[in-house]
Image (cartoon, rainbow, N blue to C red; front, top):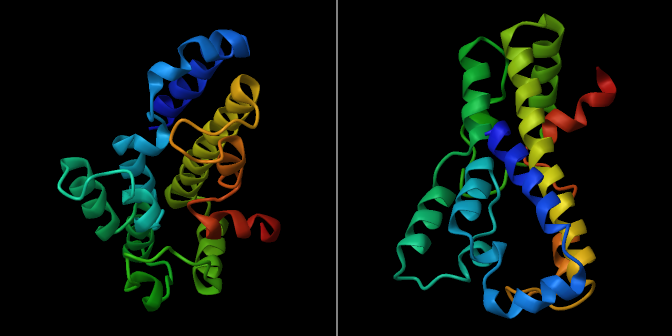
Length: 190
């Protein structure tokens, strides 16, 4: 997944070779197409733990297969839920409420999970390396979002987005929203 995200981020370099006028010349051909209509990206977000069903499903006809696939992903445990289960199976003290949480709701930061993560890092073994890979993945998604926002600002400025949003302003609100907040919150305690 990290390699895929690095490839996607690198493709923005190609788009940035266009001037705003060159982009505008073909922008109308995109019609309403945007990342908001990317069912694959929405499913990825759901797998990572984003839980905003109204916003994520709104672009799709309720009878469309994309709607069903995203809705199903929103009902499944996220990657982070699986990660916490892995740590618990390895003997780390993940709180029971974190393991039995409602997976249809976004994961909230947990002091108990953070204490367990600190123990993982102190052990400095395979589980700690996995924590760092999770941070790498989260950072890669944030990097893609940042590069996408900058590309949008560069090509269309403050114009309305192709998906009907306020464009760059909408995208900018997603920049520093981590999928795995506990892994970021413990950084100052390490």
